Length: 368
Image (cartoon, rainbow, N blue to C red; front, side):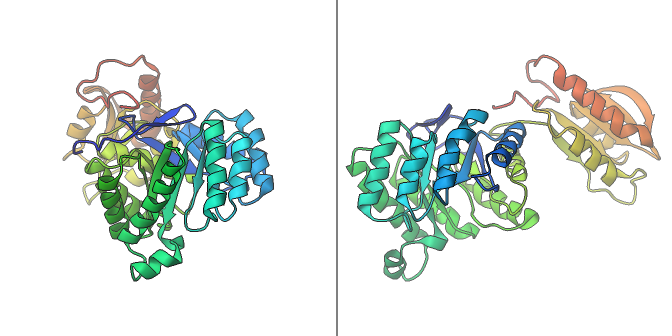
């Protein structure tokens, strides 16, 4: 990671964003917000996965009013996402939202936006100016002869200047397109033009595999350049997967760590155990662990012993059997049918121990 861009700090509920604060992982619920019980259940699942800020859609008055009841049942900061009707942003803020996301391409007239800003100031909450390529103002599309990164930045800067002109400065910005090149170009450009914190994401990326690739490339490139203060991976699937993907991106860049990291070989003709089934079971059963451990699940004797020895906990597979390692030492030899249960149990034991100073085979502390 290059030297991190210096940005202003804002506060979203209990979570600081920007100004050198840890890069926060966000997600968005896909339940009807007015269904309080379903939304609260999903938010709790997101929190267990490591979500630090959660956003809910506010398409109508019922959704805005539900925020007050949702807030009573959760501990995460909650951001209200509003399109088309600025009055809903005011209503959501008064219901207790910890932040507002408004889209300058469709939120309404400047006078309406000013009402939102006044309410946010009174409530002491920040606003995210969320520019999307799919809803860029028509005047800017004409000016830039299409939907371009430069046009997205122009849209954001116009609204930043207007809102700052009303003496409101608790802002963050996002500029999302469904393709990586425009998204990255827009963030690089705005990073040079403002010191506001930036919320990263590639929007409407698609299903799990394609969406993960786009998000990892777009968000990863920007983070590696020191750009970004918070992120959301957008996937067409369970939003819990968005949170897990966000943490994997941060871990891959050695920015922050949370939860076990599984090291596993791609398999080849030397593999003599059912490694696919073994990895899937282990991943599923240790998913709720927050400790940043390194777990190796290896299938043969070429790289298996070395990787398993270097991990916090690891399995090196043999012919219908395997060796269990912990902190570089052999624990015991096991039959294939015993491997998953033994490995999971060892991970859980190690995760329950008090944290120690990072050393060989350790993953550091969560949140680093």
